[in-house]
Length: 550
Image: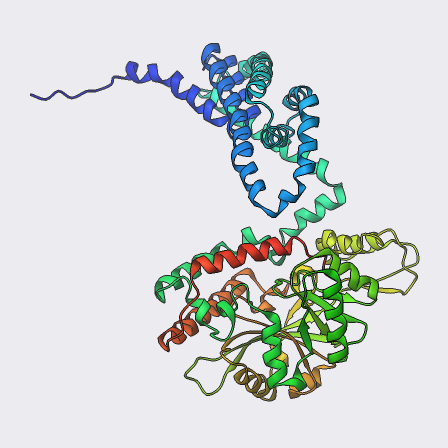
């Protein structure tokens, strides 16, 4: 005979305080002050007992502090010891000594200043403050802090709760309102601290224009589409086979100098000469640079850029030997020297061809416009950027580029070009440019492309003197060829809707996967995911050493 265990309503009710306490315990790991205030408000309404509220909040806060300490001491220190930053070990040792002398007061002070706890406790773990000392100080501070917050919240909340007595669920309404107000005030306080009102309004305005959205906000639908295409074409790394003649198909880690060398060998009249700077030490790299300039006839100004850069990172227009020396000394990453193609026009031409097709096509053209501000004899460069309807959205980028000149006043009518690299991430303006596409240009791009070994899809960055020459397919210079990871950047035209942008990218990645699958059937082996991951990590580490792009 079996018995069925049932819980009556009184039995369930007996568990409610425990559930509430557990909820506040876990809530402290997200917003500890908000959780403590919420518990105090429930104390005011009789919805929670003092022992349950205090124990839940105190233990949650204390264990959360210990978790941050452990994360930095174990994970952070291991990462530091294995990374290239280990060369700063002497500085870290000095910081450990400073924290050993003043750490107690710093830990106590950080408990009283919301926003200071996270960096302080991480620093304590990273700088190896003794665990017993850390737990003792933070435990006492959390004990006093929790008691004070609960008492204040209960005292104030009792008056507010009385006014809500007519509400059946007054305690829950009070808790929700308090949490919403608290979180809102926290965001508002941090926004005011981090930027002035003008920048705050500008940053909020950026969200009205999807072209300025951060990658984490824009790319999730594209990533989801690529995952579906990986299932459809039976392989996440299928795109790495799209261009067999380029490392990883141009997804990551490709050699720009090798691609430019292929273009120079097959279509020299359409390629801006470039070469990879060799050598490990500064003197060796300087001699290599001078040799390249002599061999290729490169005079000032010329371009220095990373061998494996993306999104225009590190692209510099070098006007003097001093600038060249500063660049070579700043980074040890492989660099390319290239003759400067003045343009003044620049376009991105996205091309593709399936392996079985005799002719390729132009998928998209991006017309690039380099923003300029005009002086009035009164306003500084920073003021002119802030007043520009579009430049203000990229003020941080421009002001970093002109850090030493942002307080300079431009004369009346004096112009300043805000960006030299034709990249949207660096502040260049993009426009849909298929009006430049003609049969003559398509034939010329296709002819150039078919001469490049193992190239089937990607984007040419081209400089040209005028639109008529580009339409005729003559008198232009290729400054870069990007592989499968490049985009049809015409989507960043401010007139393009978000839906249209996604439709274009979905179609583009469909082509990349389809061409990769076709090449795989012809015997091309995709690059392994592990190799792609390692190259991506290496590229990120090198990018941190690049100077700000022009």
